[in-house]
Image (cartoon, rainbow, N blue to C red; front, side, top):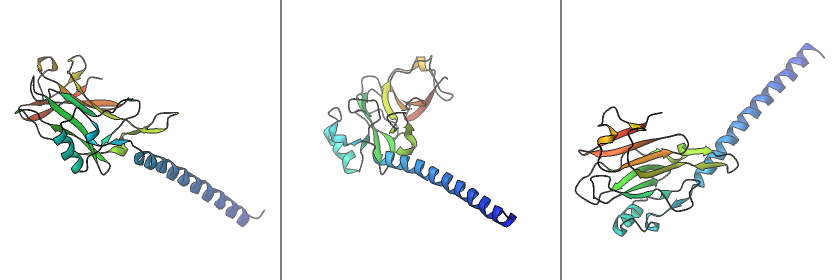
Length: 192
C-alpha cells in the first residue's frame, strides 16, 4: 500500500468514527426530546382539591400539571397553609409551553409573589431511570421544615417557623423549600 493510499484510508476511518460519534450524540438528544414530548400533563380541572374558579383560570392561561414518574395518583397540586397558620392555600406545578413554575393560589390575606420563581424547562427535569427510560422527575409537596435537614442563610431557623413550606424537588437529586414570610419567599435547602 502506498503512503497516499494509507493516508486516504486513515482519513476515511477517522471521518467514519467522528460521524458515528455525532450520530450517537444526536440519538441521545432525540431520546430526551421524545421523552419531553411524552410527559403526562393533566388539566388543572382534573384536581378536585383545587377551587373550580382557580382551576379554570389556570387552564384558560394554558397551564397543565406535569406528572412525575413513580406516582400512582395525580400529583403536583398541593393544599396547605403556606401563608399563615390556618389559612388554606394551593400550590400548583404549572407548565406552559414546556416550562414550569410553582403557582400559588392564596386562600387568605397573607400572600407572597406567585409564581414563586422563574419558569424552568420541563426538559431539564428529565432523567434516565434505568429500565423505565427517560422520565420527568419533578414534584412539589407541602412540608414542615425540620431544622435537622433544612437551613437558610437569609431566613429564621427552621425550628421557629409556624406554617407549611412548599418543597420543589428534582427526584433523587435535591430540593429547595420555599417559606412565605413577610411577603417574600425564603429559600431553604437541604443540609447535605
